[in-house]
Amino acid sequence: MILLAAAAALMVLIFLVFTPDASTGQKENAHLIGASYMTMNNEFYEILNEQISHRVEAEGDRLILRDPALNPQRQIEQIEGMLDKGIDVLILTPVNADGLCDVLTKAHAKGVKIIVVDSEIADAELADCTIVSDNYRAGQLLGEYLISTREKADVVLLTHETAISGRQRVQGFLNTIKGNKEFRIVEEIPCEGQLEIAMPGMESFIDQGVSFDCVFCLNDPASLGAASALDNHGLLDQVDVYGVDASPDAKQLIYEGKMKASAAQFPSRIGAEAAKAIYNLLEGRKVEAYISVPVELVTKENVEQYNVDRWQ
Image: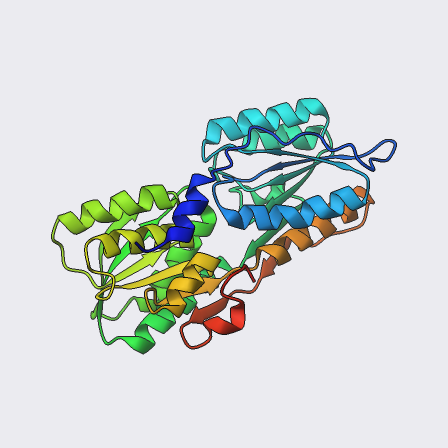
């Protein structure tokens, strides 16, 4: 069966409540850095967090990590808990872009520096620094590639509406193909960017018997779920699957001709930028309010340039 690697990864769901407070090599009066990504059930955030963790450890400071597991209320409660612990900096990927105003206002009042990564918050003024991929461009790249490789398409969208990054990717794609009557959107399936939601959602839609030949997914966990559902129904060779991330599993499917394309994100670069911003802010230096990390199109023609077995 397809996606053994993805299935294995899914079995190793982290669902962290917290990481132990590091003490090895910790300096006197160490800074406390808090991190809350939208879910740790996505290797993207592990790679991103590694860059931050390595820098924090090298500086003799402490990093605590909380996993809201896509639960917006849990994220708020966990941030409140980190504020009570006295964090100096908060690294954040919002579960719900619109729901964090009150707790982030409280963080500001306590003098906590806020660095938003991967997906924006609704009120950008609450962040000291926002570091994201060029999410709109990711959707554009995939839309342009679709138009260049097909004369027409009936497209299913897999979406995550509470994440600004997800909305931007979908909008970039839609704006690129709009105005062409030969490219139609036949369905939108909410999936929170999660394989285990995307797969049954896609299977349920397949069972309705609606004709389609392309799936645009806001990220690669969703694209892997869609590809698995299509494979289970014997349709993978008839439907083009597009995603965002260029994760190792997605690149393997692209290499095998089982997935059409993915827009590559660079989590290590985002993490490195976040680590740099942490210490610029702590040392009173100015940082850019908004940092956009470029994305790149990965297809069967160039996938081997991106190290199929690991993140770029």
